[in-house]
Image 1 (cartoon, rainbow, N blue to C red):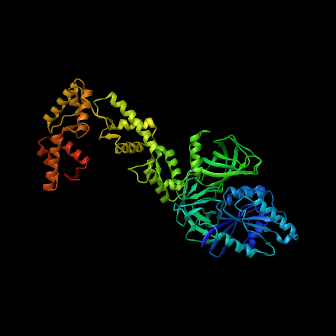
Image 2 (image 1 turned 135 degrees about the vertical axis):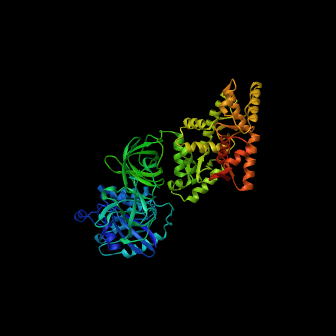
Image 3 (image 1 turned 30 degrees about the horizontal axis):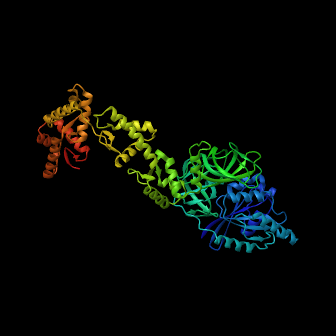
Length: 637
């Protein structure tokens, strides 16, 4: 079975609820006040099976006072029934609802002219139909089928069902995304003995009993106790179904209409949104920069300040880029459609599409910001991904998170990332699979690293490099890097690219070499002799340096000799002549090859020194993973 959502739209008292009852046998007016007043106040829901289709029908209120309720239910529909009473024709809410449908980019619809039994004048009926055709010109329903029905006599109700089937056959397949699920909540109620139940239109993915889901914007994770579709328990509900979910351990007051149920960590709460905003062609209102509006997306409603990025105002039929600064958080995604209503008096004036659900705060008239917004609206996935990576900066770009954020299959995002890598736009993080950084940020880090090290090399020409921890600290401070692991990853990447050379204790520019004056050459020779004479009885580095008048330069020369090869560093305190170091390695390998292991005592006797020096050397071998300690012995790692 294919799951589809049909929504109604139209002016109050044009027969939406009666039509749904004629189609399904279900009365969608459930509230006492609705029965008393004879109008729909809250969204109602019905269902029916037709051919291969499992159809959910949403009955929205038509009265102007309840447009916000209509907006909470109209998102996610596949097909709309635009209902117009033959007795009155097109009315104000007909036009407002239709503007909303166009802004939400509904793809297909059927015009249902109701109350055929109440109008005897055929010329009047023809005139209404001609008005409707003129009204629909240039819209997605310009060529939509039109049918006259009577919910009271049943005239053309079966024909309408057939027409619905034909239109559903023309719908494209609903995109199926692998990331979890998403459902905007439009009703919350309790059932005695079962607890809290929410309903909504399942937009993405699927949900089953036992799943953990997250309530946004509260960000609390809860467990699904039971799932129903069309009033029947089900093992799993899928995108395109009206779904009721019984939540375990949740009070009715813990969740509200406008909240979103989604896979854990799949959404972000937003207080700012980047958007392309478009005004209804027939609105008489002007949207000024800084205006407050009512913002509707999914089932949520919030007040927002509209900061126009590229102009001073928007009037009827115009469009532009804006940042919406919300007064309460919402959980939405790139590509979601929204409606805005004038602050006071409250009337629908336009809408648009979300380009970024978690942007930085922008300044107005910034060309680079506006250019990026254009790419996010109309660019290819590859172009958008490049912008996402550049904006991520030091936060890096996770392909898995980008796929969720951009509502795209991970395979498509991965392919786009590989193409950007080939073009030199992205760099893969070797320490974190599936994570990338923009080449522009790598260049920024490289420039900062070169400035820091050039300064250091100029002040310390005998030092083989800056202390590694000090260098990382200065880089973090210079670039305001939040996570030290990011700094370490970027240093490693620059080393892999041949921009830096790194030892265990220091960092230097790749092309830096220590240059000795004759005085320093003499000092170097004396240092080498001291270590050669000491053999395995290694002197402390500070003691060797202290033997020279210029102890600082002596210390730098020792570090340079360790980096260059004549000496080997065993620990922070001890260095050793390279020949003796190689001899110690040879002894360890030979003894272990012969006997399978070597003890501290055996190694001490083999090199002929006290236990203190033998321990230092063996612990160094453990650290570099030449050996591994097992009990009182060492074996090869």
